[in-house]
Length: 361
Image 1 (cartoon, rainbow, N blue to C red):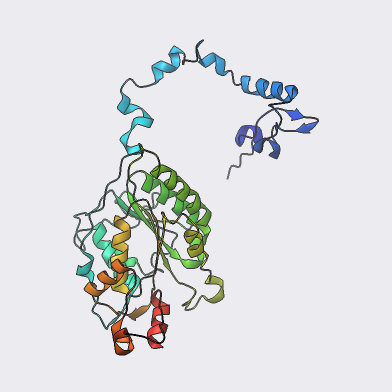
Image 2 (image 1 turned 90 degrees about the vertical axis):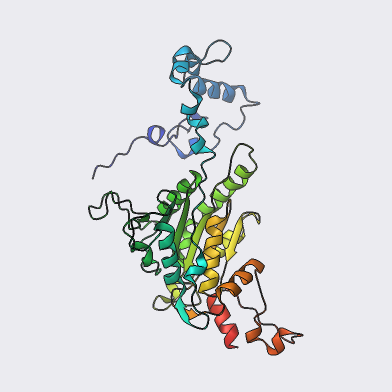
């Protein structure tokens, strides 16, 4: 391994005036702050700032009235479509997904099924029109970015189609085969790729454990600020939402236990602007199918979908689930006394596990 350790002023942009009042600026932490705080009133500091800025010789690149010199003008493409800032891909590249009917993946009411396994089967259809077929549905507009947890999250069905496997650029087994699933054990990297993929017009999904999604909380918050400003900018067009699927919640840990209990990501997202943040806790698999389709179609949001990996009861049919999700909440008469009319006590369930407990009560 070759390790390069350049001076801070060269490698990290820690540059500026050499020193002030005997204290080092260039090459130190001070250059990353505001080292010359009195340039408006202190002539010495102003001259230091002027000397440093002029050291870049910007005047050699400008004409008398501030225009670029001819050498720079010749580098700029005459064709506006070839200028980076004018490329449509940078501001108006949104490509809506072709989404199959989720009701075709309906699970029978009254049965038990793993929510994530069924959702994985649906996402397979988003990749490939038919299972085991090379006919692609969204060949260039949908990807899953997973921090090496796809199988653990029980979304492994997406790997069954020939064209929706993993895409490890350096791995001979999966290289150049058009895989649509990127797996790398780095939540930060997955988040960065998800953001870039979304901003260039496509749609992505990041599934992970509840305890580990919090790792990208700050990145998500910064991205949400960008989305807010982008929506207030006239020339920026639509972009898809960024979508998270959360599993292994604090309420059902199986073999992991205390180390994997951390629901902080929900708080992080709910702390965002109300016009951007969306947290969904569907109570069963049919509701989750309806939710994931809604999120993949939505634009400009940060969506968090919370589900279960283990087989759990299917409370609602596809039709009932659709109505429930559109309304956001509903009275379940089958679990109520006198059909829920004039109740003395109201029990509210949110999400798979809590709803299960409420129904049991």
